[in-house]
Amino acid sequence: MGFLPFSSKQEVAPFIPPEQIAHTSRCIFYPDAPQKLRKRPLLNPQFNHPNKIDKDGKEIPFSYVSYKEKLPFCCRKSEAQNYKNHHEDMIPIICERFHHEKRIPPLPNCQFLLPKHATVGQLQALIKRNLGDFAGMAVYLLIANEFLPCLTENLSQLYRDHRDQDGFLYISYSSEDSYG
Image (cartoon, rainbow, N blue to C red; front, side):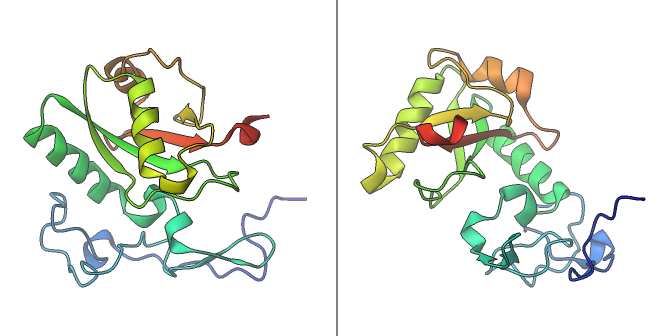
């Protein structure tokens, strides 16, 4: 019996050539591609509906969708390269809510540029400040969905060891209940 990647209820997104999908204005790989979605959030070609459906049949709000699902790889890579070119002493970070988190809301802006000498503790304080009413809750960080870093660890070392192929360091945040 073979494994079926899609259930019979799901529709498979048609293949769209990369030069025909909408890209960000900073995309260096497809500069002539249409930019019709610039005023709305950009969507990955495999993610062509702003509200995904979870396993229970409920719609997932667009703000809960990961950054990797919102933008094609070439646009993410271009964004990271643009940040590195303009801010050589900064680290481009994408900080998103952990996918099993229920109590803490997603941040209004998931992109951060932090100095290379900044620590994980400073990033954690920045995230808590941006959470507003939820700033009093315990917040834990997970690097590249692999491990919990020490609060005194330098972000430049984490960036060297755990950055994604697109050039961003992906960090998830959660309340204490999500990790065990």
